[in-house]
Image (cartoon, rainbow, N blue to C red; front, side, top):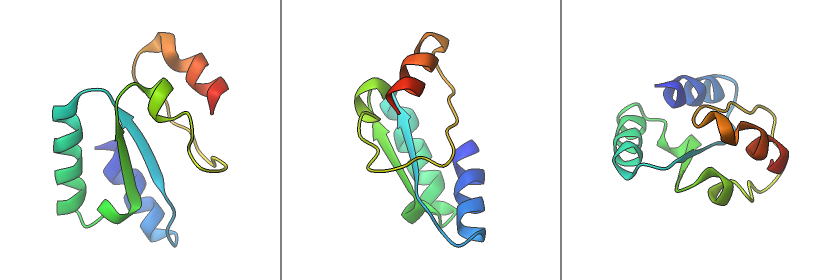
Length: 81
């Protein structure tokens, strides 16, 4: 649900790109379907796999970072990004 709210905020403020990482493939499928139904899929890229791999290259500067998942990965992901 958080991705939909963030993507809607991007749209309402002129666009942008939201990159998310998800380890579980069923959650990726469900999230993509929800984003498509909400008309927000063009603003969101969900990368499937371990965040330390999928977020190693986000392709530029990061304006906002929201970390939710395995607490032990928070600092390594933050340092990487």
